[in-house]
Image (cartoon, rainbow, N blue to C red):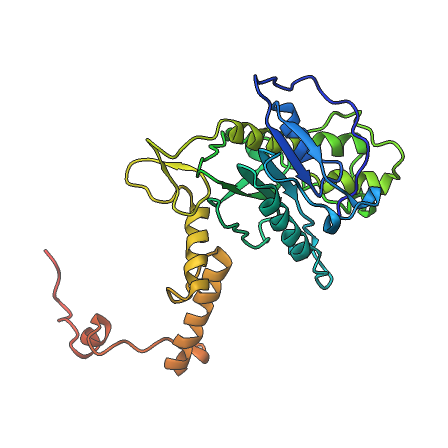
Length: 331
């Protein structure tokens, strides 16, 4: 689970809308996601966390009190960096989140996790899966996260992405940073996550501080998705990408990016709609290798380093049998 602690040095960038929306934040840890919502003018109430001895299984939300429910459930089971057997914590947390949403009956919900996390759909709500990279919001850090979103009336949050800066990229901030050789300083680590360099978590060990910040959402990304939800609107007058990433498409386009095409292909493959085909560059190379093996089997000479014999209608075979006159020349 994500560690929790006292958040200090809250910046004075928050908006103050006429009527602040009340948001319930579950599995908060140090709640960088909730902090981003606070800085965009939302009022955030934090649910139970293990660090305080809280138990999400015993928590029950009151219906109709919250405008939205947000969470960043444990990601270890679904992370590509996992080197051990899954614990089941991710599935349990998603189940608790689903239960909390159905109890609270908010207007919308938001669930953050790594790209490998499975889809979560909740009856009575629309569904979008928005992929956001910290580099699209001014960060040096390559940090891709998926935000699943549902709204009872189908409103859509349109996230404004920036052009990625042409600067040297930094490795992703991870919870295991404290134990890595050549670890980045605490100030640099916090800055890469969008936090002030003098950010403090009093009462926590150095390893716990790195783990808490590394598990959190990049603050600029949290603010971007919060601002988009604040301005969410009905999908009227524009078209959305068919892969449900909430990007707007123009003209005759159906999918917004190459990643959207890959996502749709994987969905068709998993549903058995189409035959499995290459999606990534690595998979394409594997298909090419298989084609070479098939070619070698059909042409034994290739296995021995020879040249594949020409076909019956090839120009090579024709001129080997009917050589042109020696004195002929093109004029």
